[in-house]
Amino acid sequence: MDNQPKRYDDFVAVGTNKIHRTALIAEDVELGENNIIGAFTVIGGYGGMLGDFSAKGKVVIGDNNIIHNHVEIKGPYRTAITRIGNNNLIMDYVNVGHDCVVEDHCVIASGSRVAGCCHIESWASLGLNAVIHQRIRIGHTSMVGMGSIVMANAEPEYVYVGQPARKKKKNVKGIARRDQQS
Ligand SMILES: CC(C)(COP(=O)(O)OP(=O)(O)OC[C@H]1O[C@@H](n2cnc3c(N)ncnc32)[C@H](O)[C@@H]1OP(=O)(O)O)[C@@H](O)C(=O)NCCC(=O)NCCS
Image (cartoon, rainbow, N blue to C red; front, side, top):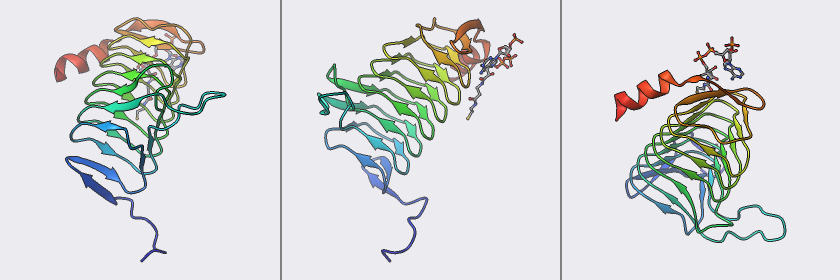
């Protein structure tokens, strides 16, 4: 019945992808295979710039990504593509800004905010509520601690923590995760 609450597990199969019925996916989003997209997630559409609201390209999403509830992935404004690669885990309430690239095997924990034109290299992890300034590159297999604010590029394979985030130590756990899974 229409007045019944929406079911939490009300997913629709679109090819090999499972998309929650409440998710909003723009028409020009390219979706690969075996992705799961959660409730109230919004992918594509306008990039949210002052003056000109329209997206200038599309969002391209690869394969085997799990994108949880209430995630927002903005369409591009400065380039042709906002890109999410393969095998990423993007948790609840994450915002991925316009023109961002998230490569492969990244974990972006709940509440993280990635501003426009950032590049998150493969195997990087962002802790809960991490905030990434626009145009920042997060190096592969690096870890940004929960609540940290990243204002400069992060080198590969290091842990960054604090506000602003500073390089703390080698990301031994992240390197082990990568080496076990690849
Ligand atoms: C960054 C992180 C991985 C470091 O964990 P760790 O390797 O066990 O390191 P430690 O706890 O020993 O901390 C090392 C140092 O960094 C500091 N530190 C750790 N995390 C920090 C953070 N988020 N912000 C500021 N400082 C932090 C510690 O205070 C410690 O400082 P010290 O050397 O001056 O004593 C961890 O603190 C973190 O933020 N994990 C993310 C958790 C998360 O988001 N989980 C979501 C799962 S769904």
